[in-house]
Each structure stands twice: as structure tokens, then as C-alpha cells.
Image (tube, rainbow, N blue to C red; front, side, top):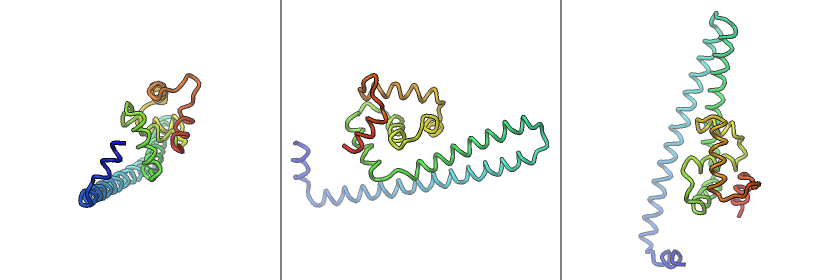
Length: 166
């Protein structure tokens, strides 16, 4: 109730300042998204060039297979990362805000993981995106389960999906 009373006390100039601050913040985030997307595209291009060079090498086929598999995994990770950076919508921002208000104990990585879980990414894809192993992801999900206050048989995915539409 105090928040509503404070909102009513703001002057038009204060609202204009807030709007201006938000516009600057959005512009900065757009620049950062463009920078990250460009960097990812450059990395993916370099990885594809490296993959072509590996294919051209005259080396043992088992060694070549290991090298190409590593490159393909990195390319897939970069592709997932680019897709994740582009998929953040207004409803995702609202979801993250709602989640952060309800569970202030979640850190930034856990918030990001929560969003990815809600967006139906599997544990392996999320782990690659965050830069940790699948087993590490399972540990994080276990700790998040406790932080969210879920029962033993409650699903994080179901909980987050319900929170998103609540």
C-alpha cells in the first residue's frame, strides 16, 4: 500500500526522468545485445573455418574425429547462445522480475537458468550455455529446488511455468 501512495506522490518531472533513464537503459542493453550477437557470429564463423581446416588435414581419422566433434560442439554451443540472447521477450522480462521479487535469494545465474528452464531448454543445453557440466547443472537445479521452497516431488519447470502465467 505504501508503494501505491508513493507512486501517487511523484511529479510529472520525476516520471519523465524515470522514462528517460529507462530509455537509456534499453538503448545500452540493445547495444550490448548487438555486441554479443556480433561476437557470437564471429566466433561461429571462425569455428566453421577451423572445422574446414581440420577436414583438410592429413592425420589419423580418430584424431580428426575428436577434433571435428569438439568444433561441432563449440559451434552448437555458440548457436544456442545466440538463440538465447535473441529470445528474451517482454514477457520473459516480466517473468524474471516476478521471480526475483518472489525469490530474492536467487542469484543472477539461477535467474537465467530459471528462464531457460521455463523456455523448455534441457539440462544439457542450459549447462552449455552457462558453461558448466550436465552434472553441475543437476546440482544447481537441486539447490534451486530448495531455494524455491518446492516439495520433494514438485517440478521446477511446472512451478516456473505456473509462476509465469500467474
